[in-house]
Length: 358
Image (cartoon, rainbow, N blue to C red; front, side, top):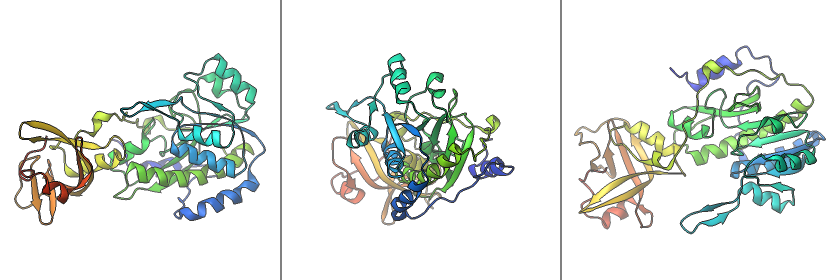
């Protein structure tokens, strides 16, 4: 049985000897920039290489720059084609690195040429945040202060590439950020510091990522000076308590109406904004894909339970009967159409009420 995040967290820090055990997550975003500037006075005079790719990583890089860390190079994933038009898209980290005129690498793999460039940058520390690639031992051993990873879970919970989504899928009520030393394993390195962040009932991956970014940035800027000054004692993870992330794929968005409403709602939260959840509606002889853009949940069944997957009006709302409970539809998008509030959708789609969704 997987222990709850809260129970596991208390077990992890109960005998903690490290300097920073539990941090309270900052709540007010407007004070964040001021806090970063104040911490700039304590930034250690070291050479830092930053590795990351998505928006969360770009925010962390921006905070490190504002705190006056000496970023001597940035590594991010190669540009990729997106959408039906296959437009080439640069990562948020690349955009920021170019804006700040920072040396930039986008290697397909960590080959000898890439390693040579990293060596020439002479990093004292490498900070990694959602880079998206495994680092070889030659890179891990390069900086004197090691490679420090920013991981969005309370390790050893949710090791892997999608910890935020998995925390939401599990129905957890809290998660957090771990600052850890990287080793050759997948998020198995020693823990430096952690911060807990509560998960609101309506949090999605998008909103929770922002919360973790804010809390984690504070933690990172507190941790790095302590680590460089050797005021922290790394702590081993408990492999017995470890859980691994489920890899998120586009097909995970397909709704199975026999599941209970709460688990379907958690799936919606976890897969928003990507890949989103969807089902199929058979309109006459056409089977159409229907995206469920905004939903809410009623955990209890109505007095008159409908067949699983049936759409019905319940008071002022439009809901679908699940294996247990109701999933209310608030905003939907039919294949090839624009997003619509459910009432507007009903006005143009007679016969939707009373049908079985697949």
